[in-house]
Image (cartoon, rainbow, N blue to C red; front, side, top):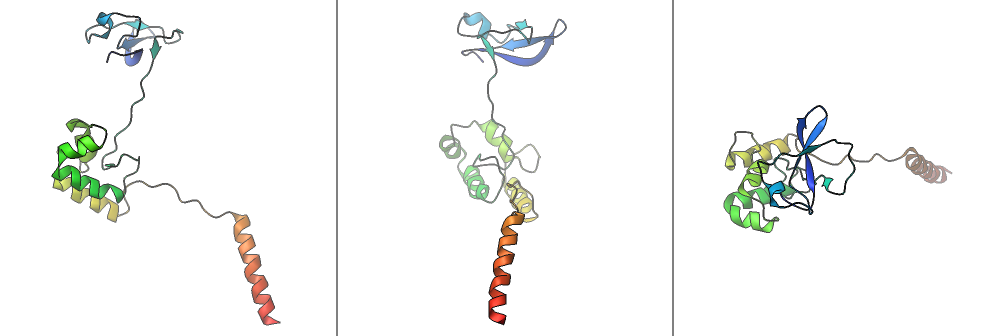
Length: 156
């Protein structure tokens, strides 16, 4: 995990000190070695400490848009039929990353049973979706007023 900054990790050392990984631009290669375990006070201010952003891979989210929906079915089929092609066209994903999003049924394997599990889940209302915004009271009031106005003119 070498890079341009040391990354905080979950380890706790000597009271409240947090572990660091990766080395920063001012360190030699020793700091980037897996065996090297520096630590520091988490309130310390320095330009060499930070964190890396990581994306979360949701099982079934093959288009990686953060939602599991019908748009993922075709891409899952493509991954099942041509794993390397899918990995290359989707940001150079690794086999383990595809296994994480592909194991929909949780059996530790990525196979056709996962495709069936995804389809079944979506048919029964599973998956994820954005909430549908409800119309505001003002819009409903205006529509109701217009409908009453049209009906009132016809009755005269």
